[in-house]
Image (cartoon, rainbow, N blue to C red; front, side):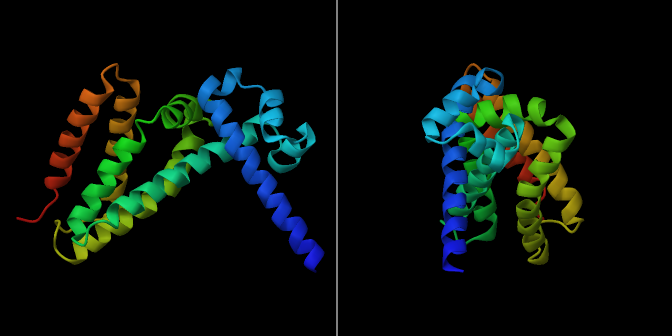
Length: 198
């Protein structure tokens, strides 16, 4: 049993290493120009290890894209944890998302390549799986405390998450990213403020 545990731990460590190195390569070159040979060399593994863990290059990219999404959620949680007020927790998370999504690796992997490589519908499902639950929980808590108007947390979460994804995409595509990020933060704050109870 101990040997099996060590093998599992080694396999998981190898998988994590490949994802880290692939993320660097995909961020620098994009999916189309990223070569498996470069990723394999950076991770110091065999091509067979990549195929074993991920199936193919697209499977590896999917794992990388999901890792980026998980990192975004971690950043949101850390930002929200700096506040005790539920409304300010939400706003801190929202602003952290916009800031994180301005990073070049996130821009390239999440906004440029993922919808094309994985497919718009499949990628939308992934975005909802990572962001939707967090947004819905936050809105449910605010509705329960009557901080925002009564309504369906599911519907509100879908709409507000969509707005955040589009705002982050606008920042990612902008020539003036600093100015666009400022405008996006102000616009998103006004959008969320419209939900507040009188």
